[in-house]
Each structure stands twice: as structure tokens, then as C-alpha cells.
Length: 350
Image (cartoon, rainbow, N blue to C red; front, side, top):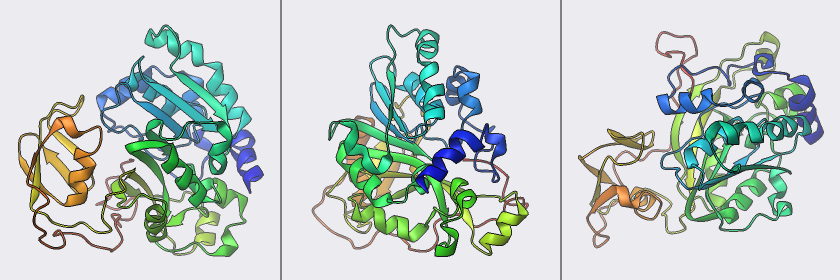
């Protein structure tokens, strides 16, 4: 299957228009600073983009970032602008054709951004075997990935090695495709379904449990949307399985608890993270407005206090008293189950 995926993304697909789902549809609602960064990326790089979301978390200046499945380099070149000349971005991909395009335009982007030297590099490798790339453990602030981990057959190996490469308090911030139920084994060998990021997609609850097993104890859903399947033959094969594009953030914080526990704590966002003056959105359920006291569970406290975000918040409360489970914690399907094209869906992309 690995060879099938390499051929699909290196030879079969020539642009995002060749895909059979709307995973890569253009998002007109991107933040202005991201649109500006994208406008600086070479057209050939943009044309070979096959991601399913936006993988640009907050506060990136000076960060060291690893992109798993970097493809033609679109996200790397966007991130290289956001981390600045003092930051660094490493892209890893297994497809020669994609890497050729990414490497072809390194000097173009360094000149475009006014950098003395490029702050981006690309390496050929497999995400299940990151240890072969001689990357230093505990050396990356952030790891990103855009609709690629589902293509890996050993997803546990990817997440475990990513955990080892992150600094304490670092995070994986990535978009991928998930299903509302487990995909039947019979569909896993279909190269088109696999290449389209469908049959390799994890059932959402299996993903949550796998992430916890690999050390990411409290996966946080940032945003999601249902995927439209634009091919009747593929729809027929998939039956009643629903698929979602979703962005998660997974923190390397071994002190996190299995559930959201209430210690009577709260935070106040100072409003000083670049591009986010009015509010900070940690995840889908934590929209923290500037200057407003915002109650949080112990895990959210650590995600803000024990990471790069600490200086941007005031912290209220201690760990002296436990009040039980935090209100609002649930275990049902976390995605918005609205059919694409319905009046309520809005038709937006993540």
C-alpha cells in the first residue's frame, strides 16, 4: 500500500482538482495573515497541495517545526514566514515528485521573504520510521501534519515517534480525516479509497484512544467539518460511513489527567498573541475572550500554563481542592453531523 500511495500522489494526481472528495476545497474564510502568507508561495507548490485543513497554530515566532508529510512544501513555506528568520521548519515526505517541487523553490521563497538563508529543509523519509532521519529527540516546539497520517499503516509508530521528538510542553497540531464508525477491512486494500484518505481513516474514538496510548493524554478537537464524496462509485463502496475533516492539537504534557477534572481554576487571556487580539481559541470548546475570567479544568490549565502560551495568560486558583468532573465533558461523537450541502452546513472548509 505504501507504494500505491507514493504512485497516487506522485504520478496519478497532478493537482488538487484530481481528488474525488472536497477535502482540499479552497477556504475563503482563512485569516488575513494566512492569506497573505499563501500569496507569497510559488504557484507550482500551491497547485500540488493535497491537505484537508489549516495547520498554523498560534504563537509561532522563533519556533522549530516539523511537518509530517510535507508534500510539495505549501505548509512549510507558509510556516517559514510565520516562524520568522530565527525559526526553522523541517518537512518530511516519501514521494520524490513532491520533494522535487518543494526543493526546487527553496531559494525562491528565501528571496521572497528577505531571508539571508532559507529556514526550511526537506528530507525524504517514512513517517513510521522517523528515527531513521537522525532528528534530535525533544527538539521540536510543534509538529504539524495535513491529511497524511491516515495514509500511514502504522499510525501508532507515527504518534509515538512524534511524541519523542517534541519538547516537553510541545504539541502536534494536525488535520486529518476520521470516520464515524470503523472502516471494514475489505476496503483497506482499495488503492483509490486509501489514496483519497478514506479507507485509512481512523474511527474517531479509536484515534482518541490511540493518542492517549502514545502519551497525548487529552486530545483536543480544534475544528471539523463533514466531507462530501463527489464520486458515486466511491459512495457506493463506503455505504453509510460518514467522514470528517478534523484538526486536533495533542500536547506533550505527561501530567494531564484522563478526564477533565475541576479544581476551581480560571484564566484571563491578555490579548497579546499576534493575530489574536480579541480572543484565544484553544480548541472547539475553549473560546477565551480577552480580559474575561474563563473557568477551566485542570488539563486546560496545564495546556496554557505549561506551554509556550503561559506568558499570555493570568492564572487564578490552585490545586488545593478537587470539585469532581468538569461540567460539559462528554464521550459522544465530537463532530458536527450536518450533511454537506444542507441549509445548516454553510459549505465552509476548515
